[in-house]
Amino acid sequence: MEMENRQKEKKGKVWLAGAGPGDGALLTLKTARLMEQADVIVYDALISAEILSRIPETKEVIYVGKHAGNHPVPQEEINRILVREAKKGKHVLRLKGGDPFVFGRGGEELESLLQEKIPFEIVPGVTSAAAVPAYAGIPVTHRDYASSFHVITGHARKGGKVELDFPALVRLDGTLVFLMGLSSMEFLLNGLTEAGMDPDMPAAVLENGTSAGQRRVTATVTTLKEASDRAGIKTPAIIVVGKVCALSSRMHWAEDRVLGGRQFLVTRPRQSSSSLASRLRDLGAQVIEMPAIRTEPICPNERLKKALETFGMHAAQEWLVFTSPAGADIFFDQLMELGMDLRSLLVRRAEVRIAAIGSGTAAVPEKRGLIPDLVPQVYSAAALGEALAETAAEGSHVTVARAEKGSEELIPPLLSAGLSVEDVPLYRTVYETHPFLREQIREMLESGKIDAVTFTSASTVRGFTGAVKDADYTKIRAVCIGEQTAAEAAKHGMRIQVSEQASMDAMVGKIVELFGKNR
Image (cartoon, rainbow, N blue to C red; front, top):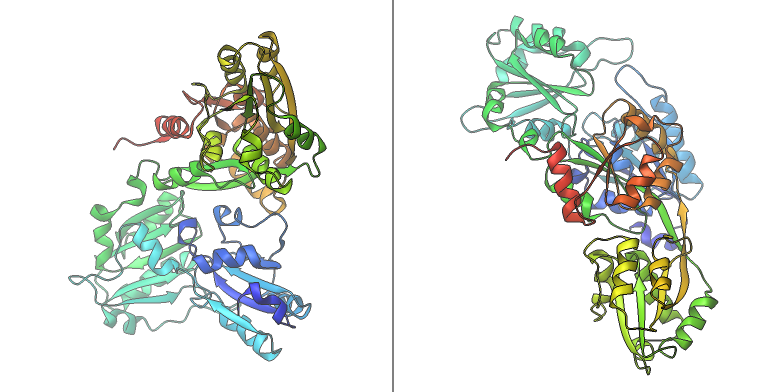
């Protein structure tokens, strides 16, 4: 039974789910859905910021971060947390890196749930044992090199040591994948060679696999430790030993993509999915989406009701103006709530025309069969005001449907042209924070792990700076959609780049120009 049937359940329930090795694209559809539906999410340190950014703002989250050699929350306490939250009647998502049953201690958590008779489900995740080598160009099996692969923990129990049957591992003659083995690398590699493995056997250590920061070091079983130390490899990392490691020199691919190895923070309104983020991911970038603002409809909206009742009765030509996709969507939603449809709006004595600030905004009325008469070449409030002032017939009436605090550059050109203007607020912009991401994003920005932050409006700049307070903004490279957005970013000392046009195509082009590789 899924979470949507929760009314039928009297008890809480726990889902043990794998979030994969880091790349948000490797998150399963089921886990993504559970992140939206759970009451509380209990998550590990290895969950990437890209995946964490998908957790809705309203969710209760409990961090039980565990790194190799550093366990701030003991496993026994994690078990108690899951039982405690489920007994409150909550639907609990236990979000674990990789797969919960591949050295994820999911079995131990499951035993505690069984003991307490807590309902549960298991959601497998993409394991790093296969995905990380794949992103490094290492197939764990290959007809000519290895007919099997074996996943081994390189991490000892607390107070103990790693105990492995090295002669048996050598006899397998397959690919050996050691998880959590970086601190035991010397012991593991020496154990294999002492058990008779060819000292020239190819080997690799792979750091931060599937993420923008992934690194690979390839060598032999006898030289890998020295090469790893020289490169400064750190956790999380896995060790791969086997003939297939030699293939990475010609099969590598992840870092070869146009934006491979790059990571961007894309700010956007919470209600909007980001086409920019999707396009950057298609080019190989890792993208953290940070909803910086939320639009809150003004409801009830008496000003809109009065404006609609008299729309089309002021002049021979009347214009309806939209300045954002969110505003256009809210306009049509409120139209329906008021019991009005397009016939009541358009069948008036005036000639009705529509203007939109840009192609994204124009797409909203277009989906409803209304093709805007005016979309300026430059997507900005000032350009829209100037274009409308030149285009509208003398004495026209203009109804602007937009945010409560809209740009001050739109209205003056209209008034200067002698047009009558009704400025109708449709929604308020609420600046949000992402509490459990705030510190992580600040650290990533200041350590250079995020190459740039994208802003598509002045509001997203204000939302971002409101969420990530006290950061050193001078270290941030900001890619802005237009001059007004850039001016807001400049107030905080950000290093600014502006796209050639105020469009998603131009934003992507500017990012590729700044950070991309030659094809």
